[in-house]
Length: 625
Image (tube, rainbow, N blue to C red; front, top):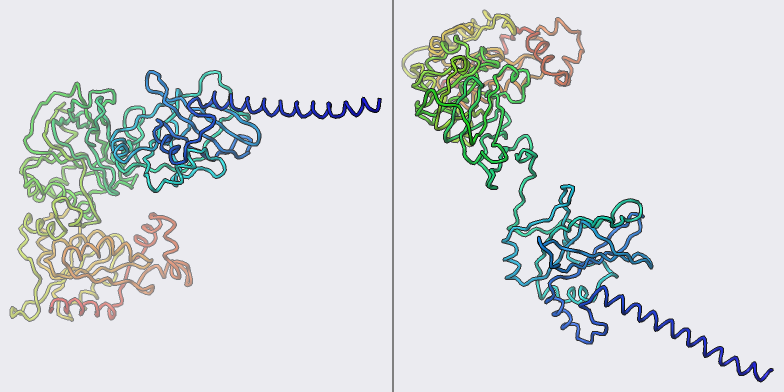
């Protein structure tokens, strides 16, 4: 028995070795079968040199890209994306993804994948010039496409081809193209946790020639930010020229050319355009033609004008015009001379002057008194009688034009900026136009010592409701004492503009408390001086923007006299030490209504005559230079 036991022990050992060998061989065969089934183009034993292997990889129609992923369970892994072109109709791509996380290997369909293809320089330039077409998912969402900007695979998960390619990447520049994968096949299970594994990709490097079309709304209109023009594509895929520009902070401008029909009854301007007959239906915009774009209270008073393109039916013309149309509103804040000029007349000149008088003015929200008051200026801009949009609408008229501009090109308050003007106009051009239109004779102020012996004239604008100059008589006496011929005038909305203009133009300086009456400075001859008395309350910024900057833009000298607490009646309404005296600008956060009611209309002024005398002497000094 002992001998038999010794004999069985070697046999048992040989049997264990045989079983172990069988297991190893079996595993090897399984791995080989798996390799050949998953990569039919691969060889089991490749003895080719690494460089030859790389050349072979480059000759293949697709390459392998390794990306880092995070699984739904939160376990990181490497994804090997292996893409081969399929012989299917429609040119769709089938992609298999092998994910290794620990000992598990899973193959899953994914929608967001990356295709990396190495090409020669010539092929890359040809591919960049061609538009790339992306397959879309069944739910209408485009699959994401991106590539690693460094073009580097994740470490430790490279295939042999990628390792060899990385070794010689500097010798052979590669071009990357991206595409999207088709939907997941029906019935294919999702990853554990109910979600798909997502590729964490860096933003793609885009070819320089690649163009990105804007996202389109359901009606075919490109989605744009509020300061961008909306454009509509035609049925043929070409984009129409945008009709309107919404980028300016003061006004929206629609500048149109072609077959334009003003349907006055609908307050609409229709551009007949065959390209607008497609599925997109053309452009459609609503514009309020008044340059106070951000002021909802004001713009709520302005008639809304529709601007649209139409490829089919359009209203029939009842009257045709050879002259272009400029469309604007005289509603809003008009009736105040500051707004009459800043909101209408200055931007109207900037918009319509280019037509040399051959322009049809079309007005909304018309007041007959306004037309009478500014008749001479309107006639100087247009030789045609202005059209009332509401009256033409009541008559059912359709006016047709070859060119139309809806709304006015406005810059700063009372200012035309030459750099922004389409015709290179500037504020002095407008004031010169006003002097010519009103037949104002003087283009220069009186100069002291010119031998005529004539005293310079100083005009004091007297307010009669708010911000009163309580010691007006003392100011007039001081002006006369230093050598001026002083004149007092009350600015009133009903005053004839030509008469007011003639009075102001005869003067060499204008003095007044902050308010609309200072707008009359535009009738002064260039080189004259404006003195603005600024009420207490931190209003220097407003005074400068409304009248100081425009005065200098008109070629005038400007002096800003800022009232002290002792010169304001606010001292009688608030106790000493009140915030309105110690930190008035902090109260501006209460809003413009507080500023207007308390700081502007809530105080009158009695200037320190001794202090103001120094200002008058400075004005005289300006006239002597």
